[in-house]
Length: 385
Image (cartoon, rainbow, N blue to C red; front, side, top):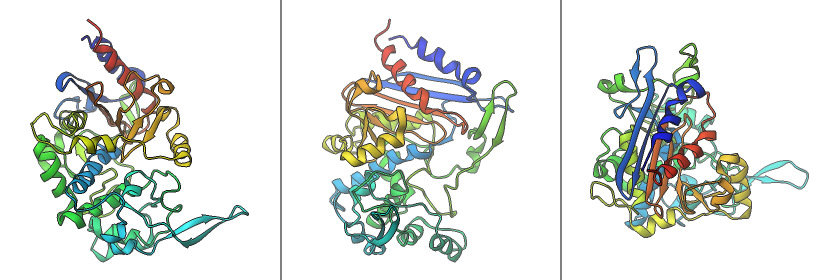
């Protein structure tokens, strides 16, 4: 193996791509073979981006959320094709936008029940949390906005389409977080800690950062300029926590590279972690990485993902490579994972026995353009000497 070209590529990100700091780890054949960091988590203070740097995962959170739901399916506590209303009654009488022949849309009662599978595969049509009902729920709870309370309030919003008829990236996985709470009887974060993070040894992954860990938390840079060392703005620009007790299954977790690679490696090893803990069965991981999209939804997904998702479908909460030639991918068909709004990126390839996790915290960059290059450099490095 020779990772020198991947290292040189990552080292170039500060000057050439205006990325303050990056980190990347790789497991191959279920052993750690590479870990590299470059740049800064805090440019002004000269704090290096390193293995203990905490950052926001954003949508890479979804891998954890869907793992939790699939665990509950394995235990028989819910089924993939169960209606969500069986667990959250507010989702029993949903409405959906219906396309009329004249091009207008009309709100009508939804005919198809919203299911757990619809949520996992982003075919639920669930809208965002920016509704009057959600805002009232936040106010009524004194700003706390607990997860399940807000998910119940969200049920009053019309779906974007009849469940199962289209793909649309949305708040589906936030609803899954509420489902975990109902089915497990625990707060979402507590469930993840007990059943996913602690078994794998992921001590730095959580929905909030402890006060004592704030000094090692990366700043969020928006529009960073390496020449000046400054950004257009520094700080959060997304409303991921509408309430102080809200835990977003779609994008709320914080982690480190050395932590989150342990989850990607466990899924790469068909659910068996490096710690020896099994978090999912092999057949469940196989189902997770099976494309769930029909022709219409696949077209929606391709349009949503652009060139970075060419050759991919969408499984149970993850992209799934279905045509490696279309993506110029060195990974095998069946490779899966997801990414996040500031540039985090997970590659999970059980057939090639490779797991990768890459992280950055820059909001003005077009990170989706270089994720595939990071992936391919990692694969090519395994065959070099």
